[in-house]
Amino acid sequence: MGRQRSAELFENARKLIPGGVNSPARAWNSVGGTPIFFKRGEGSHAWDEDGNSYIDYVCSWGPLILGHSHPEIVKAAQDAAVLGTSFGAPTEFEVRMAQLVVDAVPSIELVRFVSSGTEAAMSALRLARAYTGRNRIIKFDGGYHGHDDALLVEAGSGLATAGIANSAGVHPDYAAATMVADYNDVESVERLLEAHRGEVAAIIVEPIAGNMGVVPPQDGFLQGLRDLATAHGTLLIFDEVISGFRAAYGGAQSVYGVMPDITCLGKIVGGGFPVGAYGASEEIMQTVAPLGPMYQAGTLSGNPVAMAAGIKTLELLSEPGVYEGIAATTDRLASGLEAIFAEAEVPAQVNSVCGALTVFFNSNPVSDMKTASASDGKSFARFFHGMTERGVYPPPSQFEAWFVSAAHTEKDVDDTLAAARDALTS
Ligand SMILES: *Cc1c(COP(=O)(O)O)cnc(C)c1O
Picture 1 (tube, rainbow, N blue to C red):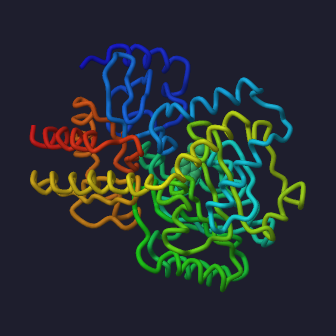
Picture 2: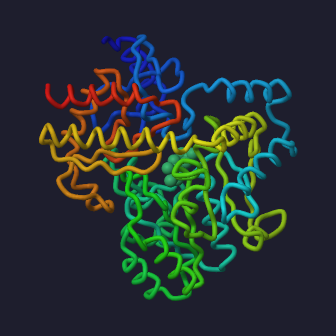
């Protein structure tokens, strides 16, 4: 399995683009080696520039829940592009997309579309500050919410993989307003709220953590956050950029029955195009311009091509049986991996939810960033290369989620498990 073309392209890329990549998670910093350059994707598979094929579990880091190049999504985007790629004025696509999101996500009454998850989280924070008149926020160690200044503190996978605790260049005043609690530890949040009564605008949390690897919320954690937020007049923000339309059609909030004040969406809602969104009750969203004093805008926001792809994605996802299928495929993969690691006597923890899992090379259960950090990155790196050499492409970091799509078949899973068994025993 040669990767000569990828190596050549990477060499050229490094002369032109910092580190050869347009997002650090694509560099193989923690696993070593040369990133694979992809040329084509179809369903659960992707082909690299040298013609090697892979069962893809990165799936664009989450957006491709229906697999690569779904023909109906491609057609929807093509049809929209022919009509006009952007107007900077409203189109029917935005209204249809908003209706789908409002119908799907229980806590959203009004929704604003933006062009990335970063923008969604950044805008949600600004909205929380504008609505409450407070400045401080609480986030969680290992929680990632995009690269907004205020949120690049103990921000999980990308930084952990790059060996960076907190980004350079963040204005200290922004970082100072950000306080960090421990995931799955309600008391760590309560202590911060008590110490800063009346000052905390928002608690922002991934309701299912995905950027320290997959870490589901323990019983009572999300409800505990809800109760504390209500008691302190603090807004609860669920960053559902990964979990939205993945854990279930209505996101993690519909799975756990806990409602946030503001929800952030991204990844899946764009159907493979750049889309993010934030939404809340009508009362909170009254704060957003042009209704209210909080400014937020975007030249390409609600872009018709991206909206058309998003609409088709949500329509396909709302068909009966889709999530049951994704959950069954995920379970087959998770339990299969667990058995293979046990058989090979390699200590591992497989955390999974519908459509996502992480294999932690770790003897102990992983419930937060501290326990995730205790994982054996060197063993993961060897396993990662063993898998890519056998035609399986997991995320190139111990702290990322493997994404399972509706396009992954039982055969894909069985082939993946065979590759894992082979990689672990040789
Ligand atoms: C990916 C991600 C973001 C950032 O989205 P971008 O589109 O990469 O800006 C924000 N929050 C979470 C939970 C994410 O996983």
